[in-house]
Image (cartoon, rainbow over all chains, first blue to last red; front, side, top):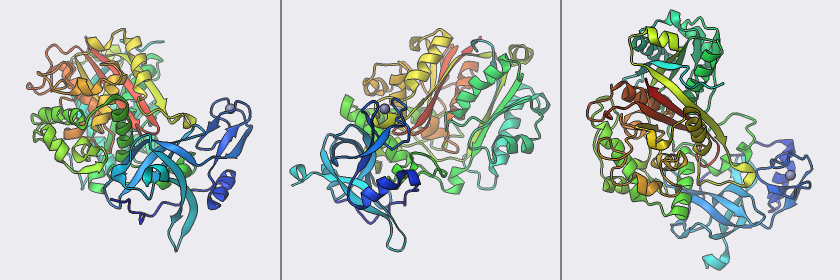
Length: 139
Length: 387
Ligand SMILES: [Zn+2]
């Protein structure tokens, strides 16, 4: 069975300090925070690096590819797949897996970023990064 | 400063109701307060310290005012469902440092009457830092715990059958509890054939949604010894906070690793010494993972440990949640920590139902996980001894 994409994704609360993140998402790019001091990526984005506490954190475009760390298919109401994806850059992020056969999903599966608009037609919100199985595995 | 042996639990009360559409939440708190004070042989006038958490309407000051308390110490620490376990430790610390002598802890809620449940979208206030990057994806209590379960299965080979044994044990205990919300004994097959809610958690892997509440009274040693009740003293306590580690999330363990180690170190005992344990059971996976993290078995062997009735009183090696736990008895306000404390006190006093009472139960552990196992949670562990 395919995930039902009719579910309305809640509109995220936006703050000026995340403006670039949402702008990039609207252009189909996933950007994540990188620390110039310790070299680590982190997610979700902070002003201070959570590892070394440096304020020298900058946005970097992620490759947009990763693997499923864990997931669950929500069966109540409009079904959807929530997951943590490990980005190839390192950080694990909460996300949804979309455009997939959920009975074929598995941990360690390769996925790539795909953007969904939050809200609905009358009240559209920012595009948010979701993931979908890579073609190599999904064909 | 250690709290070891320097504060006692003198009173405990569990509200008998599991559905309370006509009671206000504050009324439930008040009835529980009265019940626990009566159990201890104390009165409202004796209370000089008050503790409550996020379920208390209006917070600590509204409740102090509502209850008509005259206290010199008040603490509204909220770590979700583990709050009340932490409150016992905080009350002990306050008693030792001379801030109060009789601490009242109350909790109550009516999620059943209000239509709240673990499949509903999480609600958080404005400015919560992670919210913009999580809430849009639909995290709920059940699918977050489900993600931790899925990873545990992947790493350690844990099975749905093993998880089901946690529920089977709860049902064997609940059949003796006339107030339990669910009293029918279930089998592993019953759990596996119940509807899937969020893979791999079935409906019977989830706790009940019940109205109700409870209260606990913590007192100084002098007051405890003046009362005509069994002496239950606090031997050790630990707390911790665990999150997603800036993107280095590891969902295979909980904050119990830290809170448990602190509590055992302070108490000077180890997991083999524990005769009875109240283990937070919002979901079957919660129990399995906490037992590993508290050291009752090795990491990854929780599945084997909980199987074949090992958690059933009179059958297995580690009786837990002999009231039926959150899975069968009561999980008021989606916060199970208070009820966990109360059943541990019953066991230590020898006041549990005879069919589930542990012989010579003189050392018990209470552990709670408040919040999300696969996001952020507060863990609290308490070790109690009957003197
Ligand atoms: Zn850094």
